[in-house]
Length: 222
Image (cartoon, rainbow, N blue to C red):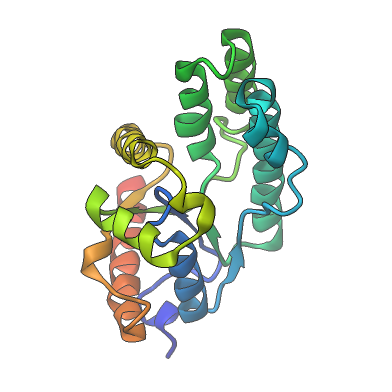
């Protein structure tokens, strides 16, 4: 019996991984998909026509970038469910509005009119009974010190050049967002409770926890 059946995880389930930069979303996505025999869904960055322009001029391109992300994530979410589920998804559509668009508005790099247009569009597209929400959102959490250490270890140049104050702000914004998020069931997972990179066997207790959590969520909805 495979792990998915052993722990009662439906073969058509859709699991989304959320968390701040450096917390290990991609690693967790790949590990769970492999163990559950699910497909993966990753953010497409290379084909984004606004990303370079955005980094050159936040105020000019923040609205365009967020609209692009919304459209692409919406299409991907529809594709996943039209395929019949069985996916682990790296990053959620909800983080765009709850963290990034909100941050641009509050920092003045997105106008009030643009922010209102964006949030109205998001609500009309996503916050409806017709939008296929994930069965479970796994929120990867850890201390700021642990996350900074991971960012340092993986050594991506753009991240190394980013001020620590930015990562502090992101960490705080993610915590505030997840504490009020209730659109779909949320399971928190502390990055200190497992070590998938050096111990592949540590994924089974996570899958056991997912199975138990999803069963409890289904019972609550009955």
